[in-house]
Image (cartoon, rainbow, N blue to C red; front, side, top):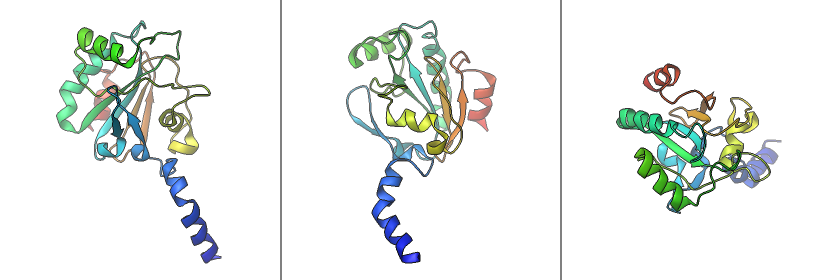
Length: 180
């Protein structure tokens, strides 16, 4: 029986690992807003906030608080990853280039922005599939409710908390989590 299990692990281990069954984000590589590969394994040891963003949303001013949070804690092993998505009322219609210019010109965004993706539906990005399914993330099932939903990832790459879109990035609950 042990040999069969060992063979099974050898045959299927890579597939399981690539799908994130270790319940960490470190198996994912994404594309940044400039079209380059961004390996989430490079974030080992850091707390991470993953947030889906949009340029034409009532919550778009949260970019200001996201940038403020990033500037305050980026040297303390904290990073924010912005993922533009057009899943809610067409509020992110721009190209990656347009989004990047908008974010820098209007909010001085310097935290890493990724290429536009889908955060729900049939074309959901694999990272968001991981973030929203307990059987993949080991924490909880969730749905992305709207633009600016936040996923807090601990230093081991595990999902630690899901924060609703209307909760500001500078909310005391988030600050306490970063500082603990």
